[in-house]
Length: 411
Image (cartoon, rainbow, N blue to C red; front, side):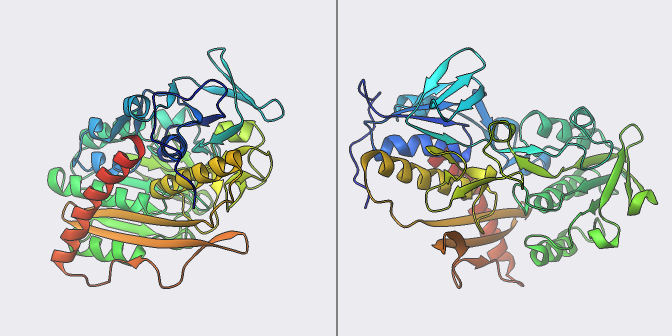
């Protein structure tokens, strides 16, 4: 067991071990908090560019009209005042593993004994011809919550009744695998309420998707005839986009799909900080020792959250929160000379099909031959054919999960 060395105090003593955490999302904020909880004598600095963090979980609820933007925004005051984390609002430009320093855009240099990086995702601009960062201001991705969420929400509100919304999810590894399909559900809820003649077309690069049976059953029940999903091999893979004409091209450009509102979710990589500082491998994601989350490319640097290669764990807020705690244990153990406990992790993903219709997937992970793998028989899915009461209960659990995990991360 990891000894608990004391409650958090306003700061650590001079000469205390220094840990810098970069990125204040579910992984980084959790790690900073739990580093101080596990060892109050470690000096922890969290570097995060934004003074408030908009969560991707819950952002689809904003699109559906279930929640306002301010309800998915979280600040860092409690990490400072209650947990003694030194929070710096700036951007890291350079990581120097040899000198063990990070350099900030504002000119400050932070030395560290251990560095934890939670860089999130970036996009493979150009993976769809014609879709780049500039185009995303017109055709939003909304896969980093915040201003992009507002753009997409406002486009939906301005759309005519009878319009077509097109959602184009990526193939490969990406943040929140069930997210595009909850998004379709929440947009359908908004349209059913306000613009019932409208349709949703999902042009998918994949052949199947997370919780597919549960989502499609829900769509047939709640939104009959409103949502159409097309697999990649059936013409769903988007090859190019005409941004000005709001038209997507599939099947080598032979088929055109015109939308009133288009949501492109591009293929993804580890965040730009990781890519620029040698933390990502050939796949575009960051290889780590999955027992500790220490980078296999640079010693004393740990990578957590969506950017990390974490075995069978998905790229999700819940997984990042778990990894933040796992990395905190590993860092404190390394600093104090403790044996690192054998890791165990969980992931839970709640999705709303409608305000009173929730579906869930959960899994438990343990280290097997150096990789995090799902434990057979642990976790599971919402049962097919669940009763209306059970589905309402799952929706209530989704609300409770969001409240609980954001409190655990930033509270």
